[in-house]
Image 1 (cartoon, rainbow, N blue to C red):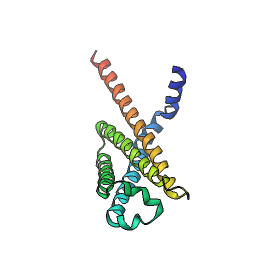
Image 2 (image 1 turned 180 degrees about the horizontal axis):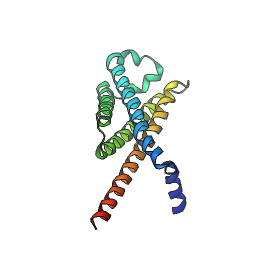
Image 3 (image 1 turned 90 degrees about the horizontal axis):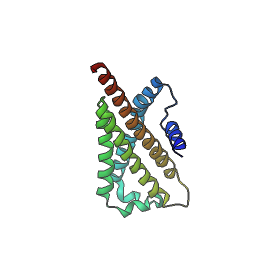
Image 4 (image 1 turned 60 degrees about the horizontal axis):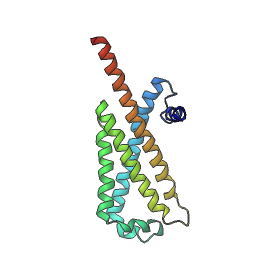
Length: 164
C-alpha cells in the first residue's frame, strides 16, 4: 500500500518532470496562477462591495446572502491582497508563504463553487471556473511548498557535506 501512495505522490507532485521544468512550473507558472487567483478574488470582493444588493436578486447568488457582506468582501480581499504581497518576493520563505496562500485561496474558490452550486438547477458558469481554480490553486500550493522544502533540504545536505 505504501508503494502505491508513494507512486501517487510522485505523479501528483509532478516529480517525473525534469528538474529544470519543475523549477519553471513551480516558479513562473505558479506565479501566473497566483496572479489570476488573487485578481479574481479581489474582483469578486469589489463586485460584492459595490453591487451586493443587486447581486442577491439573481438566483445564482442566493446563497451568498447567508453571510454578511463584510465577511465575504473582507475575506476575499484579504486573501487576494496577501497573495499579491507574497508573490512580490522571491525567496524560499516567501515561496512557502505563497504556497500556503494558494491553499487558502483554494479553499475560498471552493466555497464560491459551493455557493454557486447551491443554486442548481440551472447549471451556470459559476459552477465551473471556481472549481477549476480551487483545484489548480490547491495543487500549485501543495507542490510549491513541497518543491521549496525539497530544495531547502538538498541545499542543507550540500552545506553539511562541505562542512564535514
